[in-house]
Length: 395
Image 1 (cartoon, rainbow, N blue to C red):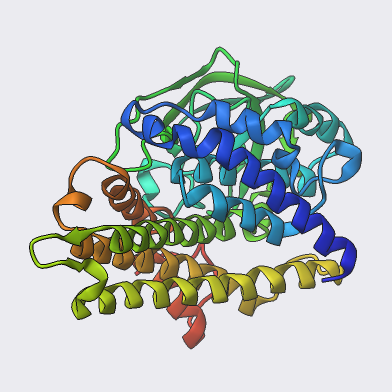
Image 2 (tube, rainbow, N blue to C red):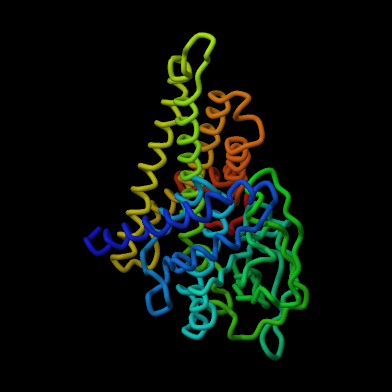
């Protein structure tokens, strides 16, 4: 990293720390308890220019790269994983428009991001479960563009996003990977959404999204008909963002239990929790696991920026595998750390509060698409050379 990039990253650290202290951290508990969508957090991030973290300066962005994006997500998720996921999906959507869209689409959908507009991607369908890249729905061609009639099973920010990147089959779909993406305005009258009351990350509103007779003009097709596979395979922000969320949450848990061990005493025998070997061993285990996550994440996000800075169109296959591997590892490790937190804090951690919320939030990572069992199978097939085709029929 050169001096200019280091200076930019240091500035971004300062900006996100300010937003965290003033807005995101103070509202995190209420966001969860009352299932409040964190729109105010997204607005605060936009006011610092952070919602355009990957966008070029001519579009109002910071052009800071994927490492800076990952750092922001990690810091957010240490306090509010719901906001971390909403932010991840927004950056993923904006990045897709920038990388695959036209100049007109850049002007229409990305310039307003600096004023607080935010988006999300919408891919998952009930029929294909965790394989969010498989769609049974299909666009219909009309004289003026396209018509969409479909239902997505989970869409982060549903009902709140200013724009949606919708994945579906092309009108003349001939194969499972014959997909197209469409940009839909959030105020479209054909959109409706379900309610969201989940075990954890209660603020990200990942409910169903229904499109009924949604009319899409030709100019809102992203990347051309059939470009869906390239968009899926070219995605970076999604998996990197997920890994960063669970790493950030792991750090938030470690910080909380470290403080707890230092401040709590058994007054009857005059010992602090840190005086017990079993407690120290558990705390050390959590710290070591978190340090392992941060080391791998730092290496991974550095590799990503280095490869793209060399002008590569997409990541090296080994790096793509590492992104998937890290999603699995980070989501499972944060759950182990959350369990350690319960073991250390006992009834304090179990009652309604920050650690209880973190424990619930951590569970989401294991099932988030692709779920870890599915992701392991994809990874293992690639490792042994069976297939690297996501659209091939699963056995």
